[in-house]
Image (tube, rainbow, N blue to C red; front, side, top):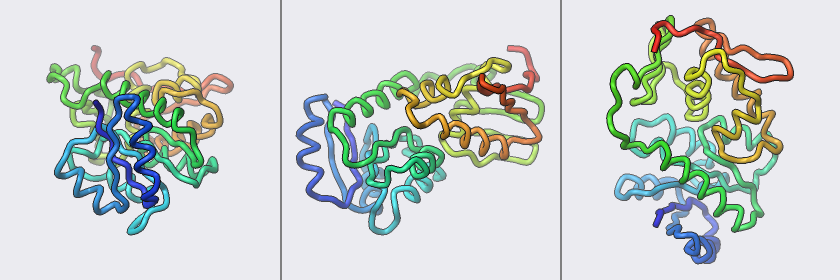
Length: 238
């Protein structure tokens, strides 16, 4: 049984949604304010968050940004944004801030369950408390750049780089196979576990933001009609 925390100020949503998700072995609990969510996260363990975009105290986008930027153990918890703000710009912003998926309201409960199962399946494949890997395997070293996969940190000669969760996942995906070309659909399917649909534009924006943070240390090359690749050769052979 996976435990989910819904953060939504619509109190009428939680009951029916909890009953439906229970069919899929998903236990849903709910709060209506971000402050209450943080208190629950500090006291209990949840496997994923369902986060509304329009909330009191702060909106869901700001909550997601603070969650990912913090140092608390739950900063890497999977987040599915569920909001009436469903235009493409808001979806891109949510993904860039570190959300794992985005579902606009009104939604079909079966689609929500499917997306949650995909997120949780991906988390099981890369558990947070995995056995310690050898130091050489836990780091990817390049000229002027080091990726610490155990700490999920990226350091350059200028110090620790501030990356969102999605930016880090994209960098890790490309850096593990330097020179390999990943199409936009490849990137979305690998990072999100879903069909690309309208999100191909999100990849372009995400790569652009990551490129600005990495240059001039790393070249994220754009290959016309093909995709993107990590162009910097590894400093140390595997």
